[in-house]
Length: 485
Image (cartoon, rainbow, N blue to C red; front, side, top):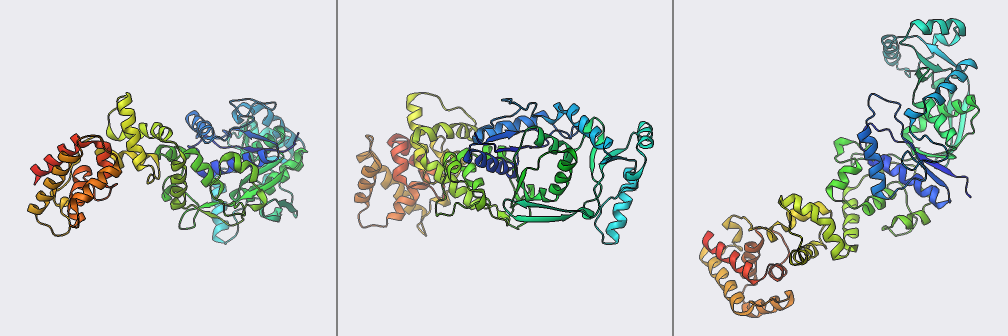
């Protein structure tokens, strides 16, 4: 069995971001490709901002995407618990170990003092690093002072003059100077571990072999390497994924629009679409293939083909992929997926009977080639469920007069009454109309007819619509248009 173990460790301080979801996907694919284990942990050390509703969103969103963890707070596992708030005693032991070994110390600087120091360094155009004077305080004196000064933190004593080197799977060899790190915080107090310590302990205790995360964590890696050394933990292998960028090439954020998986789900993107789209954000299969199912990705994914430069989020590419997956659905599958969005848009529930099911399926099938996301179905097909509203000017084809529009509508009415009273296919309806029009101006007949049926400037052709609406409803709409004129 493979010894590869990867993990995703989101913080429940907001809905699952597409960047975090992509990181989860790449970890999942890497583990599956190599027969390894994919672990989901919840990093909730930030108790003030952590919220159970966000943890639920993370778990629900990953499940909806099909990114199923082998070990997690939900399914358990051999190294449980998988939630940081349940691991306080473990962190406490390691904090004590660092203090006892003289590799961590109490820092008694106030927040105000630290902020003033930072501003002075920035004014001098120096990096805002904190090399703490308390690092040399005698241990017994520091312990005594910690009993009275409750606003202290515990810092790691970063060694001076060290070169910290590691080989990133994606980026190659990276070198950091310890003198450019500073003494960083590992805990607020003995029972309150902070991110750097907690994540290192969690990775060690859950036996993580490969850490695949965003490039914004590169600066954290030397800190984690130092902590691993100090605590006697094995060093995992690291791979840092390129950032996801907005169209302006800055880091993707709310100002660029939708960023959470829940929002994409609500907009009507399919999970298969988002999986495929996220996989191509920073990874290239090395072939011309662009459409991949999740099981295909697990077979072809190669982390060596992940790019170093940022991946630009392209909404046009997302919509194109979405259309590809929508067209793969059967009419029955797509109708079931569209129905909640359609009912929500129309603000009423469509009766669940055979006639209505067949009718809705025909409506959805008509728009299937043009749909980019499920939420579009209501606006695109509203006219099939209620009488359309429109200005009479929309009925005008080029410069024809109102009298000519009325004549056109009466012509369509006559054709339908005489030749399309029984159910006809689109092909039959088209043939009947074109033969009746003959060599005349087709637009002067078909444009007003289509507007009467839909109330829209753009829609499927009138023959498709008449086939679904039927002759009786078509005649009702023609009669109403004549009254409007």
